[in-house]
Length: 262
Image 1 (cartoon, rainbow, N blue to C red):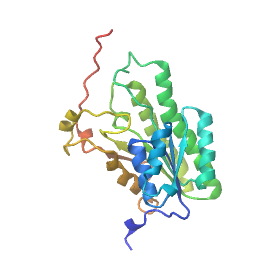
Image 2 (image 1 turned 135 degrees about the vertical axis):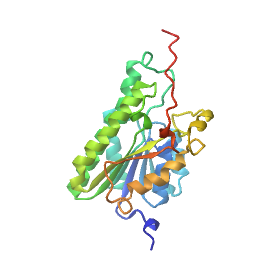
Image 3 (image 1 turned 180 degrees about the vertical axis):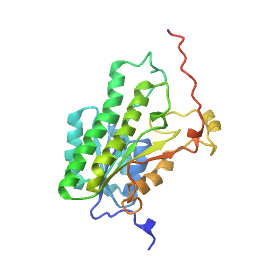
Image 4 (image 1 turned 120 degrees about the horizontal axis):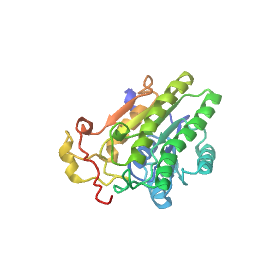
């Protein structure tokens, strides 16, 4: 039997995906369900996350959850619901991130927007990963965690709240990979390019900067996410950042922001 025919063990493995209501998180959550993995679809938007669960390949394996991960109490509630609904979570995907506006450059972004971006990306990601790891370690079970970072973890984006949150998340992946590795818990990052989904509204003209000649789609990320999450396919991969961008990172395409309002 081909190794790629059975990347997961549905009997003992279960997943939690944040940001599963749309975009990349939705594509990954639905792909996991398609592999027979019981999966909690977590999102702040009830309508989109309910639809994502219902339209997944196996709706019976998809459990929607609604809450704002900027709130620590909501993170705790999510952990409790996940444990109740699917049992021990062995695979964690953190894709949740607030929507972003091009107008929020360094002189325009307010404190509330800054705090929310960091709370959902970094603080929630850390809290959820640490608590899930505690349970896996206590149960002596291996695990696989995947964080969605960004090309702008290393390249300015004119959105300092977003870029700094993703940069911190990229380092968190390395920190957790180093700490959790001895317990058989792998932690990696997926680094998307210009993906026309979720909070990013892509300008079609951006395609001219992409060597593969087109904008990305959420579905372009899902196969790689499954490969990295699978303990059978990627058993010796941790602390890695896998770029899925059509070659966009080979160019530098952003101009400084317009500051006419100063």
